[in-house]
Image (cartoon, rainbow, N blue to C red; front, side):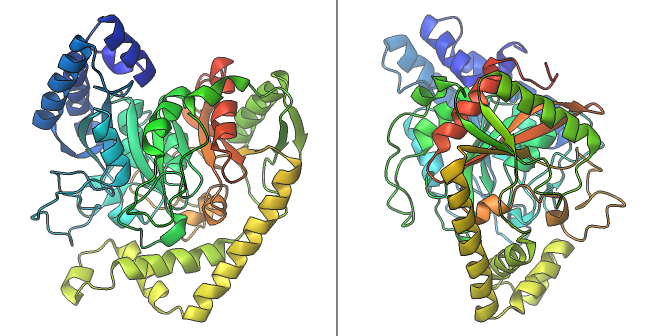
Length: 462
């Protein structure tokens, strides 16, 4: 049973096809694993065992008859408790949402997976309304790191990352408004992709507007491509969604990195203080890219830290999320969320539009940058996982989570595809390398990440 929980989605589909094992056996193993890890890491707000086993049984019969719905049929998937999943409450880490209700609609990404026969194991933990880069909430408590439970799993898709890392399903749906799939991926040692904005439709629309993306969190880049092939399909409920991708992401993996022009920015021009252990691990991985034939140049994009503009957009979104709450409900919010909501409520329309101006200029600068470089490489984060239950590392001097995530949120502002690839350990904790490409070049990000996996760049740093 434990061996089944270590397999990728790609390998599971191959096993189903060959009759080596079936979706019911795999789902039972994943559910058992989820129950085993829950007391220590707190990855789930809700397991859906009965529904999962029912869907697995139906999938098994389809595979037996040779009528399966594709490679995701019968593969266990988890869904972050920000995204709607029919039949299960979506409480978003908040005690202000009433679990009673119809809950009769799927988010677009969930609907595409349901159509393809995927098995939904459960809903994963999130900070309240996904507001910060770690995962703890008044509703579900603290989510912990799979490598060291005294440390944070990161956030806001922390439960999803912990579940994938520990074998409770090989695939997870997360959301990313400022780094929220890449941060926990880096801390937990898995792969995650924030696609180009609109590539994966989102409904209901996020109060954080066009900062918010839906993305895959997986064991490797091949599984992420497999998941993207399913969820990157238009949905009429998302007016800002993109048309279909030009081709399957899975078929774009094999090109390697030979000849690609790669810019390596280890500290965004000295703006970021990176932990020496993290810096060393990332540099070794970049050297591996060069060894695989990429043209690597150490250089920096032309951008200043846009944190104040990001705060204006983010805090205003948080204020909008909670705008309809009464005084008693507001008292039940995470204190940090209450604080940024107050700050967001004080912003004027002109303040917001000034932040949009910064965002547009940042996008212009990165557009010009990618006329020269195919990929930008940075550390995903400047630190490894710190104390669980804290928004910022102790003694860092940072006020908000954005203080230690300077490599992630700028690329939500520019809507570019960006992924975190696990490339080694620093002091026994995972380190992520971030790959960024021009808008609409998700295929390049996945291709370069896959090349690193194929070359054996793993958590061991080999």
